Length: 170
Image (cartoon, rainbow, N blue to C red; front, side, top):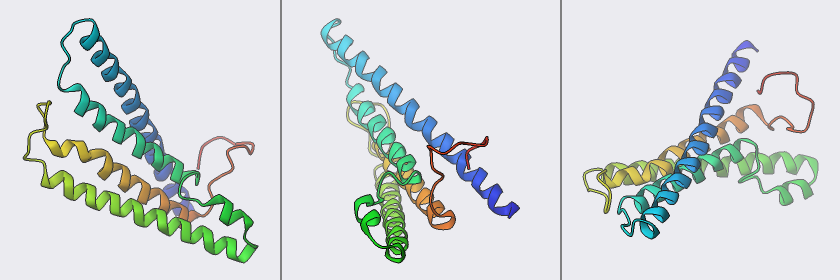
């Protein structure tokens, strides 16, 4: 099963990159909002670009963070329903939950890409960037949500984060 180990490594690398993007976006969001407050109340000159930048960063942080939760099956997992079901039904419900997450992720990515492409030529109000940039979180986050749901469909349950680890993340 060397191929599945290599694929697990690819998914783990994508997960690390996804965490980095979400964390960086969250830190940048804090910086942008701090600048907005400082500029508004200390300089008495609120910059127009901070609100659209904050909305874009918030979308990236939220959706990329949600993708990591999908990978850990902490989001779109319907745990109360799944855990209360008998064994054979439980397996079926897990597959159903993963298919739902895959479908939602694919829809977010597809419609996000449509919105991004459709509004790329329109200038964003208050910022010197395309309006389509505001949909990058929707498009990218949805794609990673779908990717991690597909990972769960292929490899099954995520490793238990409370179990003793032997080294690398799978």
